[in-house]
Image 1 (cartoon, protein in one colour):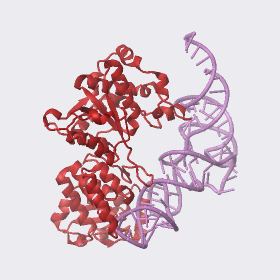
Image 2 (cartoon, protein in one colour):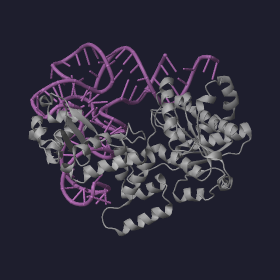
Image 3 (cartoon, rainbow, N blue to C red):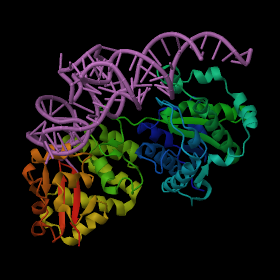
Image 4 (cartoon, rainbow, N blue to C red):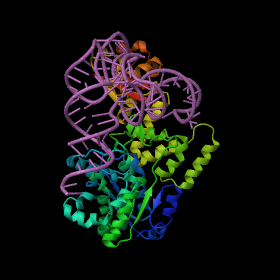
Length: 434
RNA sequence: GCAGGGGUUCCCGAGUGGCCAAAGGGAUCAGACUGUAAAUCUGACGCGCAAGCUUCGGUGGUUCGAAUCCACCCCCCUGCACCA
């Protein structure tokens, strides 16, 4: 077997990836040999978003260091809803829907870990397997008995819900921690899994599992949490104007994904390189040093975008994202060939065809319908400020009523394409029908 | 069930009869400046190109006029009671 890399924890620490850990430093020693660890992902949608990337990549880091990772998809916990640090009770999703999401997440999660690695091959499990046939009475007697409500009430993760005026918590969500704790205990029993990792909001759930495993099996297991990803300006990580950044290419195109990382603030980018890439800390520090010497634009963002896009969408996804970015932001729009434009569309640049009778609609309307803006107001504003470009030429508010002349075949690229830019970064490719 | 508090535009949160499409802050979008940054400044921010139209938990009412008053209903929170 391959040896275990004993410097793993040290590296994680240098990356700032260790938020909290149980066991007073015993973990280093524990990880001196090949161990099994797990991290859970609850199906709250049909795809994970980049918030899950840190734990996912950390599983990968453990595997690379010689440990055996288990990705748990929460078919059971997803039916309940984790209350941890949530301000409001969540509405329940139907079992059919959750089942569908579980399947998708299993596949998605599998991209990141290696299933053919001998002793430390990865595993994907579903906690519904050991909960679906469990009777309430068995659950209450075997699991519930080990939990003190007094203790649970004091958890920071539910305090808000317990104390805050205007919100409450149902028994269902309150009991969530029992299910997750059971997972750890069960994985210990089945696979000798001795470490659980998760986001910092999972600390309460993880220690719950550590305690339960000890009480049920007298097993000594460990927990570790990863930091919550924060941005220096205080805004929420992982959101843009167009919403969440998903890992699924059909929800967030590789191009949009790449652009997201490219737009990382200077104040965050080196931290993100540590969190989200497999570049060594030394390499990252070197990049930081070079950027500091340089006047103007740093290199770090493009390295980050390239590395993370490759991890999530592969070489092809990265190539597509870079191709589009280069074409759009180089300013050489007029030089794009029909083939280039066709490629951009295949690469995931938002596009649509102009309906036959588009002349009857206002330009504002056409752009809104294409999804470039949620309503006409911002488009009108942009038109008024000369912030709308069609094939590189400014279009003003006076053209609003004459979409035919704006989208006249004579002005099309390659006879049928119109590349519309709204503001600095939003692009849409229109194609004349027929 | 009883008592008290509350449900306002994406979020927080003002507004208790006309001056309200509704203060203020946040988020977001656009412009200037830049590096497809940050900070700052400017504009927008229910829908509509516009005239205008539709909103303040729901339904009905009072009124020339209601987010604001009344009635009933729904939902949330807190306490008490019931279950014991």
